[in-house]
Length: 375
Image (cartoon, rainbow, N blue to C red; front, side, top):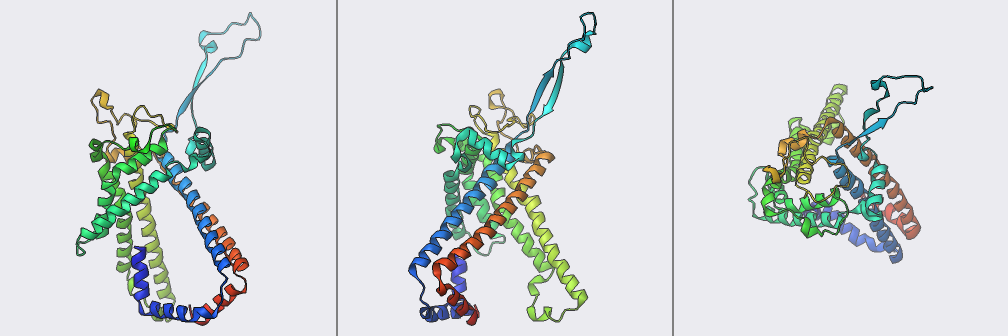
């Protein structure tokens, strides 16, 4: 997709003119090669750092939040001894008191979750499953490109079908990654974690829905833009708008934003939670989980040993995800958004400072030249 966008941008008349001017006039400015190397190197390091933080928070911690079942502990308290031996108490008054205390979920705190991961698997536990996730993403892209090549272009909602096929084909790989995240550290290899072919029927549909749902949301957002006629908006017409027309325009933009947010909240989020919980339901019984996890999903999952399916259904996977857990997951995603946005803002300014220091006066001249040429 990036290659396609870049090629279309260069082929565009305005983009072609800008490209020609950049090539023809670029020789006027002498840019130090060492400065370019420092700038590119620092950008790569910052991008890797930001990606690592995003993976830890958005993938590892969020996945654990989707499967954790808050545990409860029973505390037993004994009554105080009587003041004198002659004092007599009833049997019920002297009996120990048992209290059921609901413990705070580990994933309610990002810092607490990471601390728990490190205590169980070492410092690199916060990046556990990174190679497996990269392998799944690579396989997903390969299958999607193949499906995109063979699928006719005239089919409606083509990308939804393409991504659904890619998600279904690679469902077992993603399930193996989920098992790596939620299970305790062990010597089990990744290939040994891949579920059997017989379990693909359980995993295929949730994985297809998860992969296709972002494109469904995109089509809904695009449809709302066309329905509200924002695609016909012209800059020259906006300048002549009066107060009522500006109010209508702002209201339509807000409506599109609300629709896009609602698609994420009510389509994409349930899709990923459902898939992860279905994958976790088929975790082998000999594997211990790194967070408290109810394998029976409130009795909805019956083990194969006693004649059950050994997995949870598609709808039950979401229904068993309690409202308290949903709120906890939403809070986590909000925190992750602000953390990533804040880090990106800081790193962007740090990179700009590095650019001015490494490039010297050449960077200022390049910016001035770009402004002069209308870039």
